[in-house]
Image (tube, rainbow, N blue to C red; front, side, top):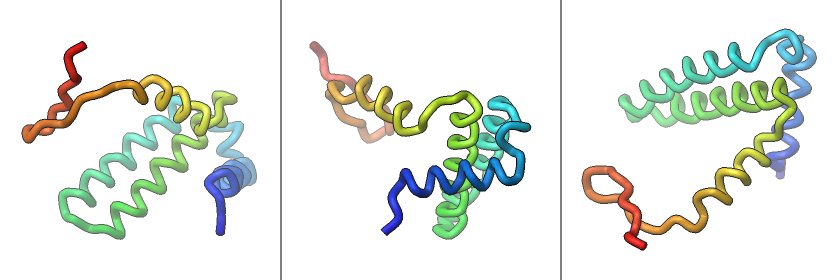
Length: 103
């Protein structure tokens, strides 16, 4: 079984071999990720699971490239976000709004 870390390194090596890293910029990779998010939205709207899967992967590739260009690690970023949200309590209501519990 391939681990996330193995896949991340495969993406970085692929991007280096094609000179995306170092010749792209974090801004360019972010813009590409936003473009891929548009394809993801299209896949969700059409309930097209293959397009959704492909688009999620493409977004992740762009995010991995962006982080590599910034000398950051995606898992560290995810860990930072997790530490920020892990203590939050509340629920999402029927309108799709997350309502935090009152302290």
